[in-house]
Length: 74
Image 1 (tube, helix red, strand yellow):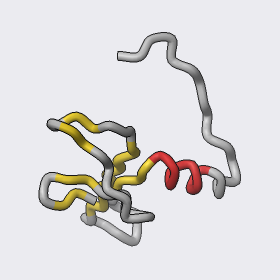
Image 2 (cartoon, helix red, strand yellow; image 1 turned 90 degrees about the vertical axis):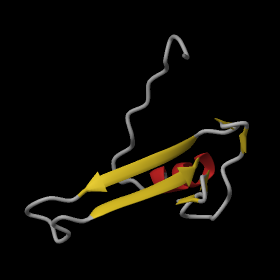
Image 3 (cartoon, helix red, strand yellow; image 1 turned 45 degrees about the vertical axis):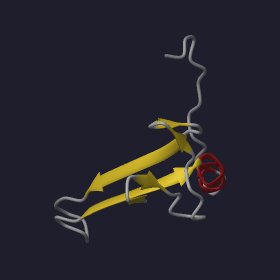
Image 4 (tube, helix red, strand yellow; image 1 turned 90 degrees about the horizontal axis):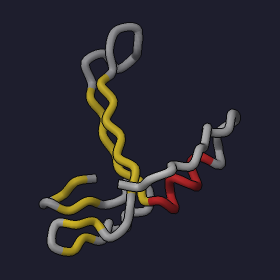
């Protein structure tokens, strides 16, 4: 959740720490534009999750996420 130039986890409400415009922790940011054949035609939904809440959500998946390791981090 973006609020006054800050980001909060939509699930737990934790503020994503930032120092001098640099985030000190990573988070998941989702933006979905719903289109035809959905019950939300024309609706845009956005949310942010801290790493801990993202892990909690993923554990609920019936089909596990695909996970690979990056060779280089930029």
